[in-house]
Image (cartoon, rainbow, N blue to C red):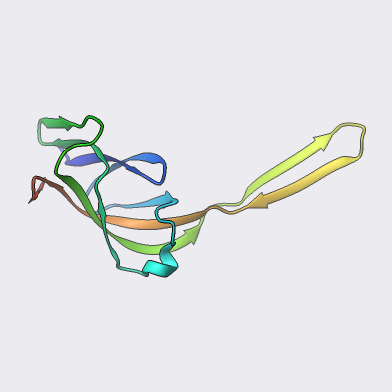
Length: 118
């Protein structure tokens, strides 16, 4: 069985595994341009850890659990188009924006100071 954790980051809950990368919105208030690439992340909002056949649940977070990772880069999400129209009134508004994302890679899942390996 794979080792994975469920974390809260950027207003979302993500299931993360070591060695994989993820895109997260609102990771930090200052943005990636302030922190730069290869900046180490320590995420403490770990909701659950699954390792081998054991599962550790937090209330609301698991005590002494961290997810270690690195910031890879900043990127923009796909364009979101907002189109407003009122029939027979000649009212049309087309707007859109691209959400800024932070891509990070998970290096390790730690519980009580020990790195959990597969």
